[in-house]
Image (cartoon, rainbow, N blue to C red; front, side, top):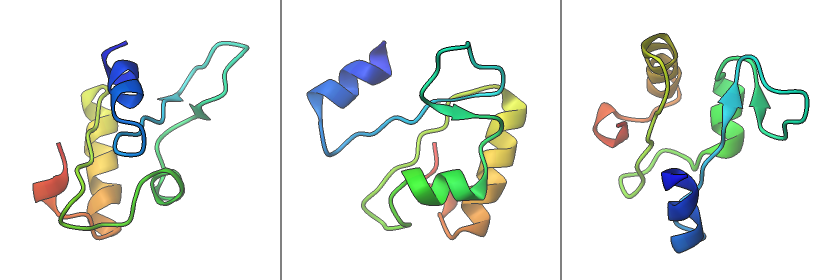
Length: 79
């Protein structure tokens, strides 16, 4: 709910894309594990004026950090 309220408060400046490994039957977000392709599709290109916020279990955060690093997102913009 907090993330969705930020999207509503800052449209165009804050975006959330939910990915579930085991989604419910009715789901319109991402499915599976966060991939490089998902990041390229749903995140802005690496730039000093953006922030990437990861939220999930430690294995997901570790894998996503590796993808972000490989795609050129510096550790300073990853949280």
